[in-house]
Length: 482
Ligand code: FRU
Image (cartoon, rainbow, N blue to C red):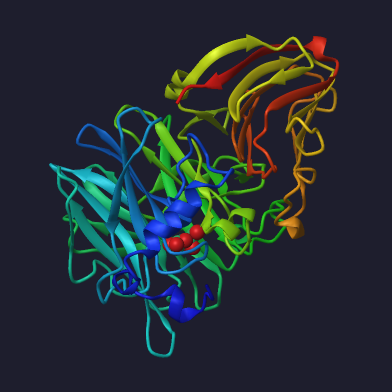
């Protein structure tokens, strides 16, 4: 398939009926298919959307282009779950089928209101001259998961002084009033986040531009999110083109978090409590969506994939996945991320780490502590041992380094094949590593730092190999139940 404007934006109805079943059959054969992570049946997955709890179920959608591994005409693919581990695919819930979203039903969020779920997303439209128009569109979902879009759009254009790169409304409610924080770009091409207010979810008024620090804006802010943890506001967003002097990141674009002391919604004034940090110190996290769940937890899901980079699965007509659901907590103005407690239910047979070589299925988890001032090297390897994902732990220097240059299927090399993170030196180091065929999620020191990424071996990883002072390691390995 040649992916040009025409093929990328062909309406879903115009594709031959057999295209999707044929693609899905091909994709299902891939050796890199994940067993537990959310992945597209075919085509490309990107941002998580509409993560919410409604009608006694967890709802989560994602951006999808089902016809190929490229960014084409996007829709929302909808999933529901009762345990945050197993997701049932409900099909397309928002389709790009109106004049306000003709070139994509882009990212958005959801909020339960009464007996219904209110969703707000960006309608992407290209005119005859391929100029972009962005509409912020409302939609209601009832308890039967039936969706009705609201027309006309809630917000029909960016305000004066901003370009049409205006998207990804993040809905939230405070004291019975509704707000949407929207990613934006000034006409001087500086990133921004605009706060809109509504009392009735019908009339929306610009409250103002959020006072993001000047060095945190880049040229465009995508996917702004705002959660409250222990009464503190936490901003999570993706500033494209962020100067490396602000943050030393290696990924094409960073996904960052900024912990606040206070957020004054009337003044649209955010007071930071700490320096910004990368949400993930690994390779592939972007467009994280987080919300305050009614059970009191702040939950997040990330897109594991990055824009503008080819992945080995592209050749198989699918790309990317979502992360496990993570719980966000705050301690001493630092954001911790850990898989939700429910994830532990997936642990099946346990074995203590004793040997240097542990045979495993392609999906497993390990959690262990390395004593202070020790070094250990982990390989997630195929039995031929030529190909592996390499993880070096040094509890003397306090570093964790992940190297994916030996996997046999390199990609995104321009952005480096290793990532290293600094934790506390001369201290015991705790690692929780989840491997699901071709994705790793690495949680360091109880979620103080996370490192996430894809890796592609010729055969599924079947061994965990340890080198160094294995006697200084104590912990467990589990394979995961289906
Ligand atoms: C981020 C993003 C969003 C946009 C969506 C389109 O990855 O570019 O800003 O709404 O993807 O799929």
